[in-house]
Image (cartoon, rainbow, N blue to C red; front, side, top):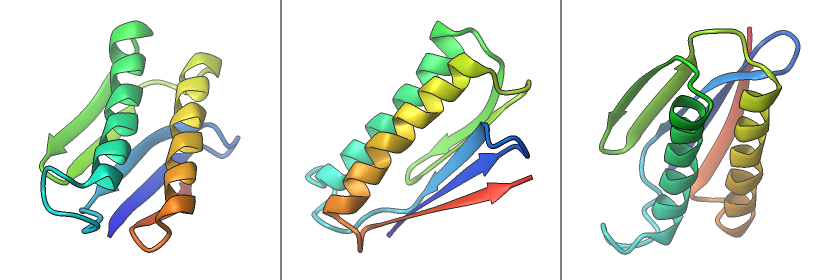
Length: 106
């Protein structure tokens, strides 16, 4: 199962996320659920770091991506994070046994 944890500020803005695990819906290299989740999460990281030039701490390895904004979330970072979440929730609708999304507020 892929476990996705969303880190939110008291105001509800997303300050980071953690994606761990594998969906197990297909063999490695053929798992479209893992590929979709990975693509959305990695694109969010790239958009925030490379396009918006925001500072982030991140850790990436096989089956793991953890991203935390160094600064305060703003409207542009929020737009990227919420767009990522829209995509992740759609994948979760298709494969509810393969993905679990939770939110942690600070």
